[in-house]
Length: 436
Image 1 (cartoon, one colour):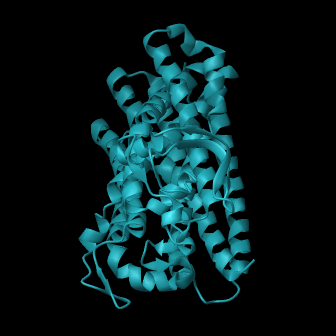
Image 2: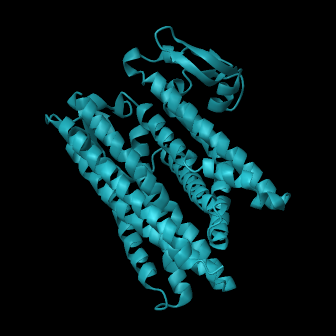
Image 3: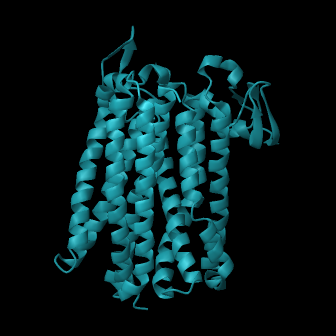
């Protein structure tokens, strides 16, 4: 493995690991706050028990996310020194603000965890809300920094020099809103389905049914509502990508030839050498609609882009298909669940619906990982789109491959530890908190 590949692999591993905890850290506090609100309004002890149980999970994920996020901040300087040398002064503002949001989140979480029976009950609830809001702000600010890499702005690039730096313009670049919106909704989908799936499994096992039913309902409503909204965000993001990064869109759809009324490809195996896609389902005109809002518009293909600037087509295409496929499956489950809530109440206790949620437990996070693969791989060969190539930003330090192996072992160990802690928490939670 070359040092260049090792550096990219280590960054991909770190991001892929951290993003799971980021999503949960952004969303779980809101679930916790809703359960807490229900307890304050109804006085039902089960909601207090759910709140306390989830708060322990939030603490576990917060600690793990803080560690993995800190590692990422060091890796930016270690693995990509040329990138940080030039980009740091430009897009550093969202990172600094993210640090502020992180500190607020940490303080609010401390207040919430140790504030039971010590604060005014509504102030205590408010500290939980602050945990969620600050966590959400933290995630959005990091996404804004990543969006800048896809849509660099806030500076002039003349003769290889970065001048007239405007950090505000850099932070609020053309891509930040669409990416932040898409990522935020994705976090609610992934976390909602994962939490609902775990509680659905406990219900099917007949363990502490009241506790897990209340927990399942809160998570399922959030996850399913977000799953139904996400396609609107996806359409908005696709049109944005078509405008700013036509090469990425072309790679996502394995769209080799520029044409009007372009077909949307479902599935298929890209044949990069022969510039075609085999075994795909084609929907005529739908790619034009996805990219430009009408069925006749011309969509730029890879034939209009210099080959040296082509993203890895196969990886980007497959990742995009996985993301969309997982999203569609969760949409279907969401439709069934809301139908059950409104029209078919008996479905809510049926084993087949609960089993669907159990099977869907990992789907949201698979979609999140695939989506970030599309975002990052689809931007290649650029680390700053159109400005700096990834190969020019990597560290010249030899031996990075050993660092990659070490971090792989560390993350694998951390994943096992966190998994064990959550498993123990899930097993203990009903016995400790279920008063039903």
